[in-house]
Length: 189
Length: 422
Image (cartoon, rainbow over all chains, first blue to last red; front, side):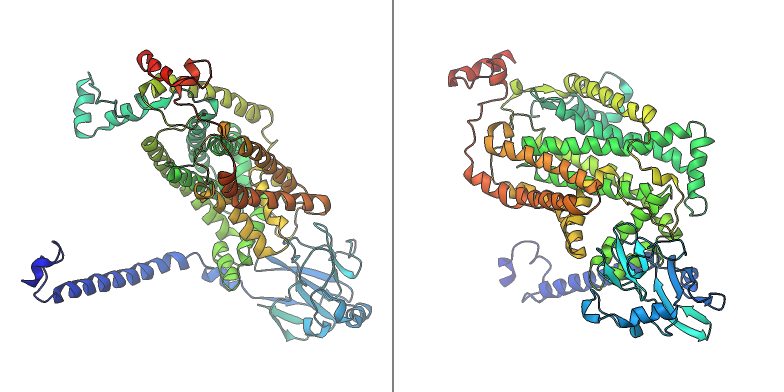
């Protein structure tokens, strides 16, 4: 007789003692949980399909031959759709980069930490301010007050180690992941 | 609305269909008999104008999509082909490109109308929130559409805007890679932007239907901001409002056509006629004019994440506006203090827009910061306080009373008369 006190609907199908109600609740929750997992699993291929595809990833690393780049010259290579600056630094440029007092840098980093071989500086050529491409790769380009790069958009100056020295950019030019595969060749990525 | 009764259709086919699917009854109820407050002014036409703009954008966009190719190698050339070789391609593209600006003009006026006359207040909160969602969908659609011609501004605009998401810690960079489908804005990005640019207008259309449905539950607001008291305060939608809206639409289309035919590139940026080049940045990246106030807010905050949050916050604050404004009086006509701050907000939006177009340096940065501070002060501090502090002017007893009695707040005895006249 106890179930007659239940409100209609919950008590109607319940087994005596009210156990049926909690069993049904459990079934609802379990069904809902499995359903949610199923929806999430089904959604994942849709979401992941928007991530970089295999052919895009295949281009994620490139080999660059440095042999033709003479001292004082610079080349720009495209890696992952971004410009990468490769500069064959002169002794004077290396010297300038090393002599800087780290205390006066906005984003302190020693020159040694930014290069694998002192004569080769390799950085992503995207200004850390708003994503412009700084000038300084061609001999005719302005190189800013610190002999590195100058961003014409908002006037950021980078030094010969690609470190921010003056202007609005918050950080140094990013050093990409790379390794020397021989004395005069690198693999980016 | 209670007075509206089921129409009797004479045409037997209409009658047959209507008894099975009451589409004609619905149209008659919502667009023929629908009671509009008799005092609405021309600012109420901008909803209809925005609706027309959406239809124009979908129609021109459909035929443009038949000629456009979403591939980084040929996207720019396919747009030039539309301009030079496709029959009327130049017209369709200019109508579509300028149409985006016209759509935003209509919607921004529509929104400021709502702000001035308190159209977001009870019982129209959901109506207003749907409007904010429509604006968000419009912004996403417009941004992705601007990327499609694959010019320099397309590319760099897409780069700057998608990079905004990198401001979020930890998840930021994976999100940006996911948005791009690569390691920079490239072919996969262009492809998905085209797909979404095609899809979103239909989402927009569905939101507009919900927006209109919500409107027709509460009925339209009016310049006095008081509810109609009966049939003497309203006129049937057709012919009164259809004719009035129709006239406003024609005037607006003349303004629109002036841009399309005489200054089709005035609102655009010349750099977008240079093909996209990932290795060369334009000297000065600016978004389209309708994003400028938000762009100014983004750049006003010296912190990258803070700027992104402030920009999204500037829109989010609109969504909760019905609860920020504590005043029960809708129309600015009866809120002497708020009315002045409304105009300050309007000027603030224009100033922010101007500052957004200028380089983020020196005095312009300062102006953008002051403008941003006022924007949030207005919504988050001023509106909740003013509702408590301000003493509103006395409201008229009904809509028809000041109209029929020469504008005075007349004695109580006059109320019955207009009833008989109506």
